[in-house]
Length: 520
Image (cartoon, rainbow, N blue to C red; front, side, top):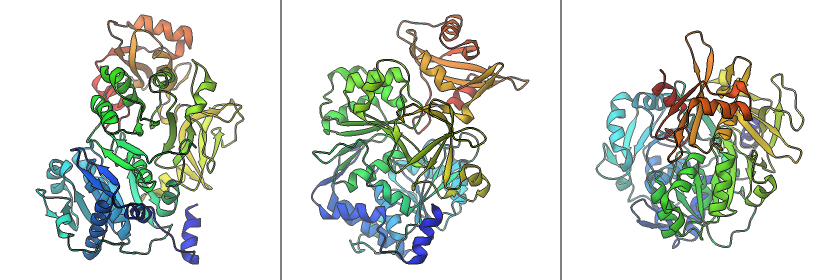
């Protein structure tokens, strides 16, 4: 697929319009609409935002930042961060985000590995810049506002033209590099192209016609899927409401106050909303879509969410290497009843998914194997790592590393990650399967299952548990429960009671931290 995009450029196909250019055209066409509401509740119109972004793009070009350059963003959930990403794209540069929650040495490795031309810092990350800057050597460091560690590039751009710089961009050009979580060493850089990313703007999530422009609440990092959904929302004529980080009480308040229609959360964050005392007195009538995904979810808690929020949940299955893969729309949940597993959905119409054995053989419905994906939105590869690229990309197919199966109706169910597999005496244990079961235990509110190796390199099943109110589960009881419902090899050998399951900066359960904190 990458080759196809490169060939289109060489053959001189009709003019290609990039995603940033399309988004800015949509904003310019309706300049009076509210486009952004900042975390401080400042409203920015589409015209104001578009003009500032065009000016910033011209400023970057004037400083030599154009095609072939890399703009790295040390930014939070700000309007300036969105504007900088679009401006860099308009200028033809590729964008790298430095994720919150990573150490300064790891961020420095990313800056160097991506061949950063200019580093842009916004007000939310000035403190991080103080730690990072002594560790990096880049051509320029610029601040996205006053009071920062470098020149204010937004102020410098004030006299630039408020119009599209019209830099020629092809579908085979790099649009960005997204990095993996980095839980095992330096994160891998995932190279994405303009062509595949452009196609995402027109992807419907639930197939329902919208009767009003969407209002998306961004409470997770713009550097991840929330940023993609912000792009889709602004292109569709909607508005984006920003929050600095995820706080369940603040999210519920914003849903009611801002008449939010769309929300994206990872499953652990969805559970926080369900468990918050304000959930019963919050006006939720305006919500028409809660999208979730990014890590395994509990069928029990998802069904609870459907009861609380109504039939508005949308399961999105995807990954940075493949973007969209499958979707489960609101009207499909009922067919799976009140118990048992829930699928992540059926493949999008323009995506092929195959379940294969370790030797590459396609497996029939009902048989579990590795999930492989073929689509136009696959990554171009891992930055400067052809060896790793060759391990997962074969003849236009991506080996996702996920384990799953199809049912007879074409719904895709996931069992876990191949790398998360716990190999115990007597068989293999996928943590997700045990977690789903444990969450049906009345004494368990939250849990995380993970493998721990002993001095002989043998693996053992451990579980961290947040007890239900008034409960204190015991290992013997939990082992008996798991053994009776799933089998002896799945039963945890150690149980750790914790106040909360730690989450990564993205919002996924941080099993690495659990493993380290509870090592003994």
